Structures are given as C-alpha cells and as structure tokens.
Amino acid sequence: MLLADVVATSEAVTATRSRKAKIEALAAVLSRAAPAEVEPATAFLAGEPRQGRIGTGWATLAKLRPTPAPSATLTVEDVDHALDVLRGTTGTGSTQRRQQLLADLFGQATATEQDFLIRLLIGELRQGALEGVMVDAIAAAANVPAEAVRRAFMLSGRLPVTAAAALHGGRTALATFHLELGRPLRPMLASPADTLDDALSELGDVSVEYKLDGARIQVHRNGDDVHVFTRKLREVTGSVPELVDLVRGLPCESVVLDGETLALDDNGRPRPFQETMSRFGAASAHELLLHPYFFDVLHLNGEDLLGEPLHTRLDALLRVAEEHRVPGLLRPNPTAAAALLDDSLAAGHEGVMVKALDSIYAAGRRGRAWQKVKPVHTLDLVVLGAEWGHGRRTGFLSNLHLGARDPAGGPPIMVGKTFKGLTDELLEWQTRELRSRAVSRDSHTVYVRPELVVEIELDGVQVSPRYPGGVALRFARVLRYRPDKDPAEADSIDQVKAMLPRSG
Image (cartoon, rainbow, N blue to C red):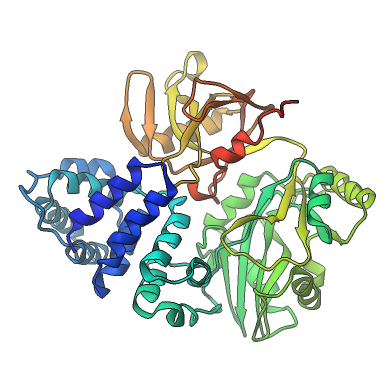
C-alpha cells in the first residue's frame, strides 16, 4: 500500500464532520492493507507512529525538507521501516545520521506526503478523539462487532495491535486478549453531573466517595514485582518507592488497583496538584511523600474482575486494601450523600464521585455509570495558541486560545480565551512550553500543536457567534495545567454546550 493512500484517507477524514463518512473512509483503506501493513497504517491514521516520538522537532524537519518527489512511490512499509531505523539510531554521531535518514525519507515523498510526515512526526496529527472512530472503522473493515474491538483495545492498550488481530483473526483473535499483569489498562472515566441529587436519582443504587484532587494511578503487583502507571499509562515505578513498598505489603499475591495519589501537608490537607505531579519526574524519590487512595480493584489473586459489578469489586478492595480505600459511603440516602460532599470540600478536595454499584469497569470510556459532582464549574480544554501580553506581561504569552474536543475526531473547536489566573511562574512556564510547540505565528499570536490540556474555572457559557463552536466561556480563569491528561480526555464541544442555560 502506498503512503499516498493513507494520506488521502487522512485528508478525507479531516475534511468531513460526518462520523459515518470518517468510518467508511478509514475502513476502506484498512480493508485493502496487506497483513504487514495493518499495524503501521492504523498507527499513521490514528496520528501516532508505532515507534512513538522519535525525538525530532518541527524546526529540524522544516529545515530538512528536500525537493519533493514528482510522484508517489513510498509505501507504508517503507516509512515504518525508516522510523524503526531512526528510533534505533543513537550514540556518537547519531544526530548527523538521523538527519541523513530523514533527508532520504523526505526525498522520496511528494509535497503532500512531506506535509503529512512532518505533522505525523511532531504529533500534530495525533487526535486522540479519533480513537473511537478508529475502533468502529476497524470493526467495519474486519466485519466484527465494535464491542469486540473495543474490549480488545481496552485490554491491549494498543490500537495497531488490536487492528491486526481483528483483520487477521476476527472475533476469535480478539477474544484472546486478556488483562495482563504489568501492562496498564486505559482508565475508566467519569461524566459531570449537574447536581448531586441528579446523579443519585439517575444511578439509583450507588457508592458515593471523595473526589480527590490528586493524580490518577494504576498499580499492578505480581508477587514482589510492582509497577505503577499514570493516567497516561506512563510507568513511574522508579519515582514512587513508597507506593511500591506499600503495595508489596498488601495481603495478596497479585492485584491491579485503580486510585489516586496525592501529597499532603502537615495538617493532612492536599497540597497543590502540581506538587503531586512533580513527584513523577523528581530527581529524589523522597522529595515529597505520596499517599495512595484506591477506589477500584480490577484483578485479585489470579481472578480478573473487569466484568464484575462495582459492588463485587469494592468487596474485593476492602479485603485487600481497606486502610487505603478512598473515603466514601455505600447506598447513602440523599442527606448522608450531601454531608459527605460537604466533608470532602471541607477537607480540601474537589467534590464527590457517584458510581452505579451494578456497573462494570468500562476502561478508556467516559460513560454515565460514574459521575463527578463538583460545586465549581470547570472544563478541561485544549490550548490552541496564546497572544503576547502587555504591561507587566510584555514578553510573555498570556491570553490563551481554548478549544473543546471534537467528538467526531476533528481538530479542537475554539470556545474562548482567557488570561486570568496566571501567576508569574506559570506565565514563564507557559511561554516556554507554548513556544516549543509553535506551528505558526502572526504579530499578536503564537499558534501551537494541540497537546496541552488546561483546567478552566468559569461561571458558565453563553451562545455566541464569535467562536466556531457557537458558544463562549463566561468569566473564565486558569486553575492549572493538566499534564496527566491528553487532548483525547479534554471536554467535548457537546459537554460545553450542555452548560448553556436551559430555556423555559
């Protein structure tokens, strides 16, 4: 298969808002892929090579662009092999060798293919929201149920591998995927609830627990072998020895735990979120002790619990880690649930989670079975660019352009701007980070790759023709950046519009 076929499909998917049209285009090209082409083609279409980031930035790639090839000859396997070689090129003299390898690759590409490769390699093509569309496209190409593909992807965490299994072996191959100790699963996500009463009414038989202002962790143990992963499935085991020691001491032989960890001050209140996150890259393992709070167990002593209802998983959690269970109540009445919400806020946390006790663990999905109740309106949005500041902010990128996730898999949709809530320290960091992600600029604004997620506090939203999303944020201010979240986990334009005042 020619790379040009993948590029044409990518352009067609970008050009339409129709989910059906996207799925049909993706399924068509995947169904034509040879067995060795399925994994790299899937990875390219999803916007991230199988090799991950190869350590080459936009400036380097832009300088290396040779005269484009007159016609398309590059194959998907040619590009995949070149990226394998690039990934393995290290050591003395590797910079020059890598530049030559890139020049050779780009010299075989047409102008359109060169543009595609640049965006692929710097991460600009990576629209995580496309994952749901890709799952449906893989199912269509392989003529298997989407739920079978979704389950296999949940367990493998690797879309290209899942696609290869579906297209080569169908439902039988997809059914072979299972939870594997040491390989992280994508975390189950929650949807926002309007009020606590609404969540209790909708879900019925529930667990209500603190919503902690910490960092999501997933912990795997097999005997004495322990691995700790972040929300993004990045392993941080070496940075958190206190968590490793604690999990090794639990009364079990094997376990997979889902929870949060956070740093506490001397009064037992949570430290700022950024301080907790700093531990995952800390030079000293004991700079700041982390405390774990678990709220789910997905495997215990050889038994997978993913398909079991939450009440069964919570019983297992109490058996293995009762002392480290996040504070909460089972089947509380509305008065007790409201009191728990007040207690959580008084302790410095964000609110409460309301979870249906009959729900199974839907990894990687944001459904209604888990709902978060917070007294403050917040949105996780993607930074699209920033305007240069004035006055004391001269020389700093200040006014942020904010986008909501497009559930159809397109680029983030702009819904507003804000420069409020930025400390001097955050301005310096923000300017440095945004400049390193710049893709274009004019006299006032630097436009960036849509990679950074920022948590925004706001009074609400209103209808507005000013922005492409048709809505605008009211009195928005920056709470914090969310390095633990990908753009795929940002709030969607539908979630933003759901905050519009109800008429009548």
